[in-house]
Image (cartoon, rainbow, N blue to C red; front, top):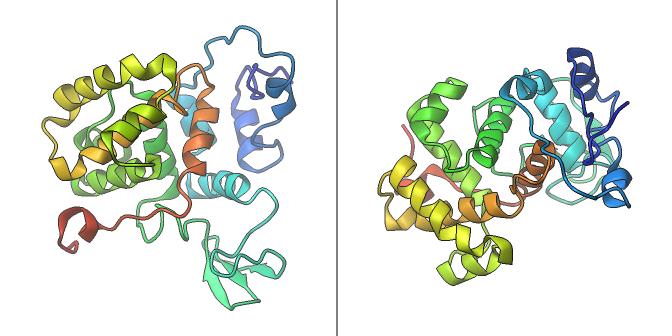
Length: 251
């Protein structure tokens, strides 16, 4: 199999994508190739929307990827952190921890928790967020993945929460790599004026989180799937509710 410098197949086919979805081909087939002596000059390694759809056409494919990424050695109970006495339920990806009697899925204790948005739509939203240089509006996301604008707004703020570290402006700038420090304010300004249109001060730290993530882990020099991997890694242990964002409960 021909590999890109990043350990992913250099050429895609529907059959190959199906193999990845079903777990026959590891999600990163050769980390050593990228981490070893073959770094050299990085070539442009991006995935098209069509290729993303091939990889994650439905909930099952998305769940398979998330479980492989978040539980590389098998399911871990998010409540008691036990990984030895886990059984799989027959429905919707549920697992049961026989140690603490807790039922959970790969969504539990992540920003994806208690969401009715299908997992493959979450992954596509992540893809759009890391590949759109200026960001994406809730109106555009709603059209792209077929949900309401209200739900899209909530999804985007959850994703920005996953991107976050410290919320102070000084800390955000410090987190941006030295090569991208000058880009931070330029990208933020383009997004605020061209995409988001005067967001409230309450939500500004999350927009800064998004820009910081896109310039670091979401850097275009990295393969698209590596950027997506980094985003998925960041979703664990973070949660923001609709009430947190608006002060009211969703109807």
